[in-house]
Image 1 (tube, protein in one colour):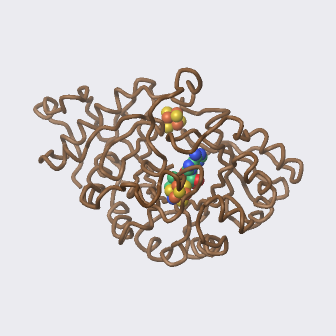
Image 2 (tube, protein in one colour; image 1 turned 180 degrees about the horizontal axis):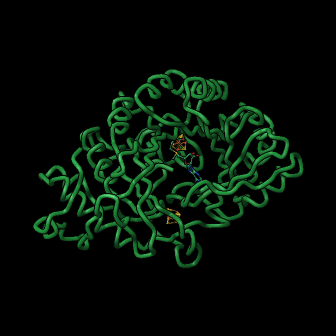
Image 3 (cartoon, protein in one colour; image 1 turned 90 degrees about the vertical axis):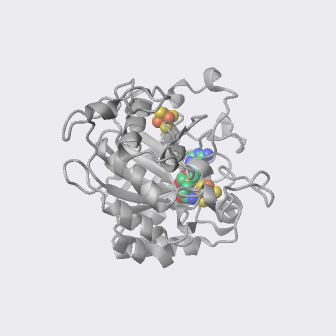
Length: 367
Ligand code: SAM
Ligand code: SF4
Ligand code: SF4
């Protein structure tokens, strides 16, 4: 990937629907949106398919055998993904996360990891390259992913109790399979492994303390996620949200905890550690304590649309640009123009103003 430097003539080549882009001088000013947030993270959803049907994400009533997933020809190829990512890295992206759907279902995903691991920031640094997975294929794939250049993984696990896990994931997969995947990931060096638990009140909140107990002293970081109103199919209701503060209260009643300072701008989890050195936990409080003010994430959908918010209704089509012969300079101009016009802050407006809004599904855009 060549370095993107705008020439005078290139400035006129911005997309019709993108505002003119300011050049990003190598090592110069970062690209900012209208709320002065830089572009730092790119989440790439590589497929809209999944082998689970988590009730809060892909309820089977909607995602059944007649559901039309994207045909393979619609998906960005690995080369196209790496191209967009390479340009985004030149514009300020330092972290890339692969997600889905279930990203390990995408055939030969290690080849994409390998391509992304070659990218360098304008300062010559590699990107922080991570992946979020439900863990079913992780035991088999962890070593190849590590060898291809993946830095870390996040594994989703909502319960240790087998029948409850089966109900929540609406699958026949055993908790043990996911736990083996987590351990193998740590063993091959994809560590520290983060474990994501979505807490749905009345469903799995009784698992908060058992999950904490299980992952204490493991070196893995358990993160509790408030149930979010992503998409329009999961029947979200505020009454089913257990807030981060309530989760923390339950944990603190069992294990003394102390706060940990955030590691970098835009970190989504509020971090705590066990006072007895048993490790760290995180709380992702997008509903009760939104963090839009420091949100530096853009999201690329499986078929190449760039979304600026998890709750966006529309994306910007980069596939059409690439498939009609757009150069890297065109892609950079489009990205810069799109980002500089970004105003999104859904979670801070959540309520009357956002009620009834059409939203993309989590399984399409990734968490
Ligand atoms: N399939 C992979 C997995 O489950 O890890 C990656 C994609 S999944 C959409 C990414 C993350 O989003 C998972 O950790 C999942 O638990 C979380 N998620 C999905 N729906 C959610 C919701 N309604 N509220 C909060 N988190 C959600
Ligand atoms: Fe699949 Fe992940 Fe959604 Fe569960 S949360 S249905 S594993 S994409
Ligand atoms: Fe970022 Fe949108 Fe989430 Fe706010 S609601 S933190 S802008 S993705």
